[in-house]
Length: 245
Image 1 (cartoon, helix red, strand yellow):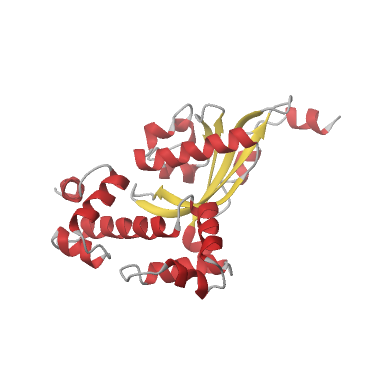
Image 2 (cartoon, one colour):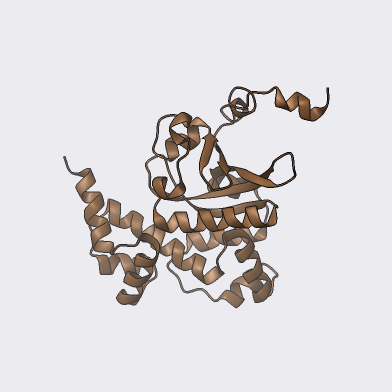
């Protein structure tokens, strides 16, 4: 029996997939060539807002996630399909179990058919906090420093110098890891923190903007709309309405 024949006898749902049900805090998924979900583990299903992996079959990102997340997910899928190579350590926004945006780290790997053609991809998603706690990467340590001081004014050249990189090197590292520049990451982080304050607090929107490092109200509105495709006021009303009895 050849290795290929041996794998042919396996039932993936009962064999390989069960491994991912026993790794704590790890989400696992498989997509076909059209980016439709084929399977995933229970943890992934719950973060997608469904109860079981079976409910994911044939679903698309557009059906499960906000548009601002979907655009990036599908762009990364297309890159994997086109290159036939993994995309690793992608730090991106993904829904929590409460369906709120949080930072996670994603790995995406191509799947090949018997002819050697890319026929889909598989991936894992896990807590970004877990990565920070275990990594010695100076860029991730810099990210933590930015998170701890998100409202202050940052100089990108100074940030790069602080970890022994040139600005160009730092820009490349951020593009490879986050698919965005350091400046875009800082703005996205501030918007995400502002969204949390809008959901859980009642401070005026202008005060929220200032507290998150936006000193131009119109700039805050513009960046917020770019991420959430709605205004801060409409976003707050939506979540307050969900919380109301």
